[in-house]
Length: 452
Figure 1 (cartoon, one colour):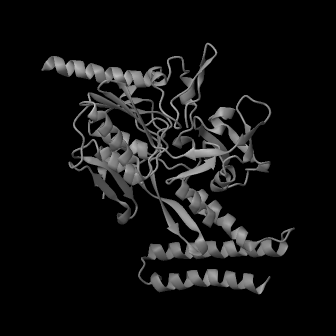
Figure 2 (cartoon, rainbow, N blue to C red):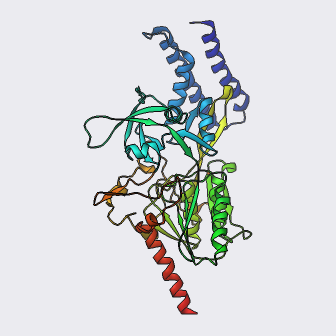
Figure 3 (cartoon, helix red, strand yellow):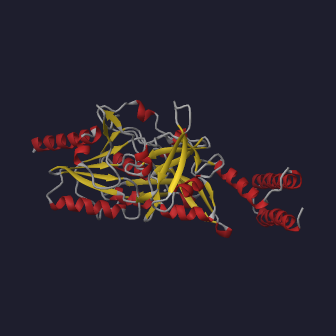
C-alpha cells in the first residue's frame, strides 16, 4: 500500500477519534454508544478499502472509490439527496437562471434507471417523439447504468446545433429506440398569460424562477389595465417546482393573512412558518388553480396555501407529492452535498410528501378525448425508490423549501400550450380543464351578481 493511501486512511480515522473524544464527554451514554458504532463502521469501511486496494483484480483509484461510496450512502437516504462534484453546481445554477442548450426533457432516477418524467413541448425531444416513462439506457452510446443524474443532464446539455443521441426502452416495445437529437436553446420562461374572454385571465406558471413573482404581477397588472378582473385561472399543471421563496411570494400575492406553508425538520433551525402579509395583496377576485400529477414542490405549496386559506378552488388531478426541503452545503475541494432537512406542511398541517394536493374538483382529462389511464401512469413521488413518507400527524406539532403527451383526434394532433412561443388561445379553448375553470368563474360571477 502506498504511503499516500496509508496517510489518508490514518487521518480519516484519527479525525473522527479527535472529534469523538473532544465532544464525547458532554454526550449522554446513548450518544457515546452511537459514537462507538460509528467508529466501528468507519473501521470496517477502511478494512474494505484496504482489501480492495491490495487484492482486486485491477488496480483501483482510491479517490474515485471513496466518491462512489459516498454517492451510494447519500443516494440511499431519499431520491432528492445527492453528493455533488464541482461540475454539478453549474447545473444547479442553470436550473434557476438564464437559458441553456439542451434537448428539452425533465428526468429522474426511478429504481436506479434514468427515466423521462416529461418532454417539454416545442423542444427537440418533444418533436422527435420522446415520451414520459421512457427509460434512457444510453447517451451517445454510453450506458447510463452507473451514471449520476447530474452527469446525464450534463451529457445531454450542450451548445445549440450540436448533436446528441439518446437510446430509450419503452413499455410495450421489444427493441430500444434511438433518437438522434440536435440541441436547441431551452429558454427559461416561467410565466405566460392570455385573456380567455373579457374580464377572465389565464396565467400559466411553468416553474418557479428568480423573476416568477414579478412576472405574474406584470401579467395581472396588464389585465387590470383593460378593466377589473372577474376571475383568474392560475395554471400550475406540469410545474416541477423551483425556488421556495418564489412560491411563498406568489401565494402572498393573493393572501392578506394566514399561514402560507410550514417547514418542519429535526433541528429547530430547520423549522419555520411563513405567514402572508397584507401589503401587496391583489383584490379578492375569484381564482381557480389547475394542478395535475406533474405539479410538484413549489407549485404544491402555492396550491395548498390557496386551498387551505379558502382563497381558490383547486381543479384537476392529485399533484406529484414532493413535499421535502433540500439544502446544499459546500464541502472541501469544490464538492457539495444536497440533502433533505425538512418537510413541507400546508396551512392546515397536512403533509404534502408522497401524498400530494387533493383537488377540490376532480377533472381527469386535459382534453375531452384524452384517456384517463394516462394520468394514472404518471410518475409520482411515491413511486421513487427510498422516498420519504409524509407525516400525517404534522398538524399536532407547532411549526417553528413534463407535459402530458398529445392525443390524436381524427388524425390531427392536439397539444397542450407550449412553454416556448406565445400561447394559442384556440388550444386553450380546447383544453377541458381550462374551460371547466372558466365556467366556474363565470358561474360565480353570475351567482354573486344575482345576490346584489
